[in-house]
Length: 354
Ligand code: ADP
Ligand code: MG
Image (cartoon, rainbow, N blue to C red):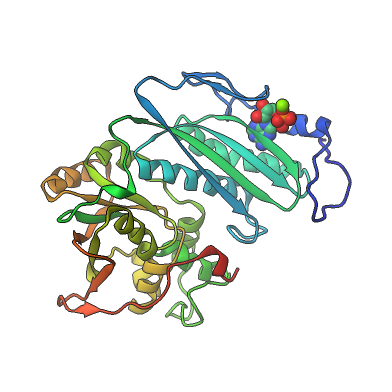
């Protein structure tokens, strides 16, 4: 069995003994299911660096997310689910840029080298790595309080990257999927939510099926890669919704120098959210909850028919929730078209209760 140094985990970083580190890497990461070959990847795990020949006329899109135990996932969460989530949230960033997944690296910090945990964690990475032909090409392994850092690399045509800055007046604002489910999952998991004490289920106890639905939304976000690759050429701007619609849409508006109208009655909710939460709490979860990993994007009106037909063919649900205007900020409109005041702050990690 691979063993780390026996020194206690304290507030200093420990390096596992090289024997155990290499054994962990060989057994759980340099495997044919995770570190498989792909064109352009000349050298992957095993040397001081991976060697990659990016195709001509492509830009390399790089993005990294760090997940810390107790903050971004519950301490005792299933390692299969943690791994799936860690890779999915990174792939979601590639979707928002219109990039095809290419490969990824993994920085893993563990309190101790638990073989069962490592085997499950590795298995949890495999599904998405294979699905998107995105092999593991390197990383680093250390001993300390648990955290998982993944950096993904993607490829995007030089002329087709999607940026936050491209929205123009008259564009329609769309979101994929349904919003708020991952924030509601915190209630299902019995964890604290930054959305306040009033944020709760309306029924005394949601059905087991609803509870499972919310937990899956949290642990198994579906990166919208297929939608972005098939329809991204029609997007004028995009972002993935990781901190709630309000804050993330605001990034598009700021970068593009425009404002947006959102029709509150158009915001898409899941059936489970509809049956388990009051309208106020559903709205709170959609606007200020985190972790949806759906896309928010803008499209010129003339392209909306084509967009909707592509989404239908893919079986991906998308909803037009508003439009881009001149000016600043977001105006929320009720079903009758009257202005609706929404006062709160988008989720800020460092203010959140965990
Ligand atoms: P170095 O000390 O030269 O940085 P390491 O001993 O940390 O190299 O790693 C040896 C090899 O194993 C490298 O190719 C590195 O990319 C890979 N590696 C280390 N940890 C991981 C991991 N968690 N996942 C994937 N590859 C890893
Ligand atoms: Mg080295």
